[in-house]
Image (tube, rainbow, N blue to C red; front, side, top):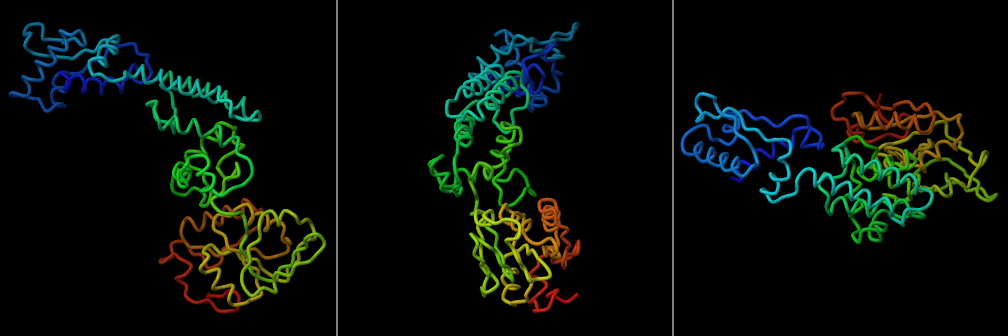
Amino acid sequence: MKRVLEALAEKYESTPAGRTGVGARDLLVDAEKFLASLDARDGRRRAEIEQELEAAERAGVLRLERHPRDPAILLQVRLPLGSEPELYRRLDRPSPAGLRAGLAAQFATAASDARVPAAWKSDWQRWCRGMSEAAATGGPVAPFDRTPGAANAEILDLLPRLLAWEGESLVRFASCLLCGDSKRLESLAAAAKEGELAGQLRGKLGRLLADITGGKLRSLDDVGILPNPRFALLHGPLRMRLDGQWLNLGLLHGPVRLALADIRRTGPGDWECDARRCLTVENETTFHELAKLQSGELLLQTSFPGSATVALIRALPATLEWWHFGDSDPAGFEILRVLREKTGRDFRPLHMEAGRIPYEQESLGRPRREWPFYGE
C-alpha cells in the first residue's frame, strides 16, 4: 500500500497540520480525485488501488467514507489528525513533526557554539533561538533546507568562523582555510539573484550575516574576505601626497592601481588634479583604449564601485565634472545610480542611450583623443 500512503503523505504535507503541526481538521480527499491522481480511474489499476486503500484502513492509518446506500462506492479518504506517526512509520521515513524537531535542534545546538566572538555572541544566540522557533513551528527558515542534514550543518559550522574572521584575505585563500576547498565559499556566496552588486560576495552567506548582525555585516566583503584586492584603477593628471611627499601619477604612461589602504592615508588637501573632468568607465577593455589616448582627462575604471573607488572619488576635488560611461542596458544604468548614491557626486551619463542595440560600449568603435571621445 506504499503508493497510496505516499500520495496521501504528499497531500498531508501541504496542509497546515503537515507544515506546522497545528491543524483543526482531518485531511479529507475526494475519493475519485485521489484515484485519478494515481491514474486509477477504472479497470485493474483502480481495483488494485482500492485494495491498497482498504489495507491502509485495516492498518489504522486512514478511514474510508462510503456511500450510505452502496458501500462499494468510495466517497472520501480521511486521514485523521493523529495519524501522522503511523503514516510515516509505514513509509519508513521521518515525519514532518520529526523533521521540524530535528531542524529546531540543529539551531538550538548551534546557539552554544564557543567560536562566536564576544562582540556577536548575543546576536548569534538571538538569531539561533529565532530560527529554532521558526523550525519547530514550520515558519520560514530560508535559505536553510527544511530537512536537517549535512547542508545545514555546513552553514551552521561556517557562520561562527566567518563572524570571527580577522584581517583581509582573498576569498580563495579564506575558502581553503575555512572549507578545505578553494572554491567552496564562492559557491556558497554566489549571487542570490540577477542584479545584485557585482564583485560583492553576497548571496546565501551575505543574507545570513545580515540577519545575524542586524545589517551591520551584509557580505563576505564586510568580514574581510574579498573577491579581489581593494584598489582603484585610474589614469590621468592626478597628484597625491603621502607622508609629506607628492606623487605625480600623471607622469605614468599607463593606468595605475591605488590600494584602498593608501587612499585612506591621505586627507583633505592631499589630492590635486589638473583635469576638468572625471570619467568613470564600466568596461576595462574600453578604459584601456581611452587611457592610450593620453587625453588629459581623469579616468577611473569601475562597474559597481568598490570601496577603494568610492573612497578615491570622495577624496577628489569636488570641482571636477563627473561623468559615467557605461553600457546602455539596465545593469549599466544601475551602476550609474549606485555611483551617485555611494559617492554623493552628480554623475552624468556619457554615450548612454536606453534601449540602444547593441548596448555594449565597445560597439561605438575606436575612440578619438578629443572629449567626448566618440561622435555625438
